[in-house]
Length: 292
Length: 52
Image (cartoon, rainbow over all chains, first blue to last red; front, side):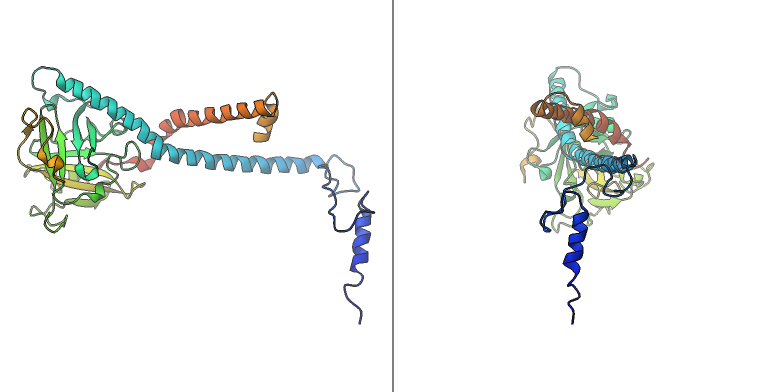
């Protein structure tokens, strides 16, 4: 019986022999990479065709570089959204807080919140549940111009302390992420609004004894997730008609849900707890800020 | 593209590296402080308000 592979080595040697300057080389070594002239594909022709191979290679390389570049730009955009906007907003918040404190320190007639114009900072929001020193300057208006600086107050909704619904919107991720952990709010949690001369303490609706956000006697849930079109959540009485008379003093926070998405809105409702507390009496803030 | 830029930068390898880094930083700064702030409000995932 003849070994079927018997004649192979001989054949291979013949083929190697055809490679110029390789005839004496050991069979194990690979032939040198042919020069980029296309000669390895059409050794018999000496036409200027090699240019075509080069062109395809350039196109493929260019396309690859373009795709890699797009990926890098997208990654950079994520970094921008998650970190750089936070830095920019934090800096702006510091400026706004300083300005606001200066304005408030100036002697003058009592300030009327109804005279606040769109884009003006008018109060400070403090939510101990979101951090011991959580304080964000609130601006009038809810366009991106305001929201990129801090939480915004829906124009036309009640002002702090008034009957009706103080509605505030804020970013969940990026732009300082004021409402990133809004889903952590529990029934009874204080949400404190500071204005020029008063503190207002709102408390998240629900049953503080059981921690059930949906079990508020008023029927208004402490937290709900709604579609972006659900304008009724900022009605004078949440979830009622926009024209209905207010049944109390509420505060509503809106942000996007789930995180990184704008598919739905996360809503937190709270009710005013007690009357306005004059700053003259409570220079360091209401006791609710430290009860936790 | 990158090969072309590299070949057209003057100087030796060290100088080319420095120039390439400067170019990279310039592009990043342009993206972060000009392009992204312009693009961002036009993207849909930043809506936090109800209504409209």
